[in-house]
Length: 411
Image (cartoon, rainbow, N blue to C red; front, side):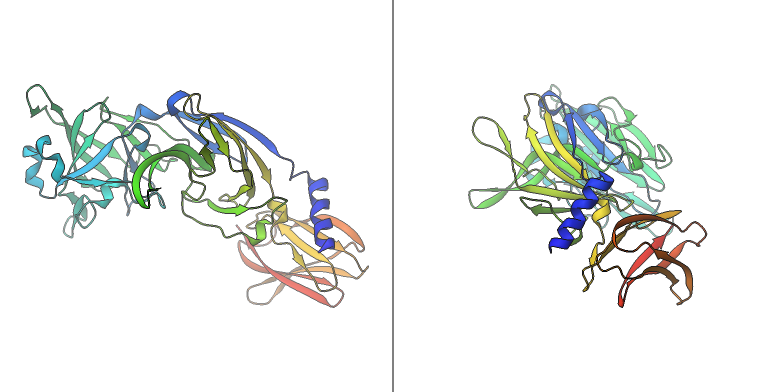
């Protein structure tokens, strides 16, 4: 154990990857902005939270999702699952409508996808291969505005119509029709639409430029022995990111964490209101594994609440600690990144002056690369793998008569 701790300490000093990055962000007063953050670049992007009402999943031709903007407290109801009822929906019947909410475990299941039709809002037409709308939804805004919405068709994009309730005449205004194509903003996950301005909106960075999103979302909140739907402020993560939550007081180990794809793993409960202000949980840490398998240790340090929307956290790149293996003779071995492309970084400690060798084998058992490493002490060495084809390999580390094998992915 002492050897392993020493090895990890050496990694921290030699690579400087465990140096903390202090990050200060702001969602603005009253959480006016949604903020996206990328750990690898330490860059953030902010978008006005009230600029859109509906988000349309656009990155898969054969799947769809339609989410409501939780950040501006819009309630969504299914008013009917009969298409012809769209014309006669009456807000006086609100008590009979079914409330719907975005899923907080996956981006692929929005409020509109949870209606009573087979696909939430519509049915599949086996002849045209379109999904055709059957359900009428009503959006209720915090200022009392009502809008009805009917999603007419999905086929490489979303066609829909909507109208606004006129309270003075108790009638619906004229319909507005629109189509949001999946071809719009090809590097984004969602396309966004504002019913208020009848326009498409860009409200997220390109998919490769963010890992986590600071926003408001609705959860099942514990209250008086039961749960209620409650709007909270917190973090949702990118669909290609996984996150582990851990209680710890010292340096944690990214190898032993339970990583989850649940997009609200970080969520909202890393801070709490103490009667005078917000306090963050001092021993709560998160390990964020991005699409390239880099891992960042996240620890919140402050949260001001809605008065300013300011928050801060520390981030540490702990990627180099992944896959560290301790051999019976006391030696330690690891490498990163994985998956890799042109080269990998071999990190090891040889405590016994044994001969140390690295061999890489194809999945068919053919040795494709071999290298003898320096002996005695702590080392890191780059290993050129640019001549190897993309695919899966096994990497053998041998120290004396001790051998460990790990999987290596080249892409």
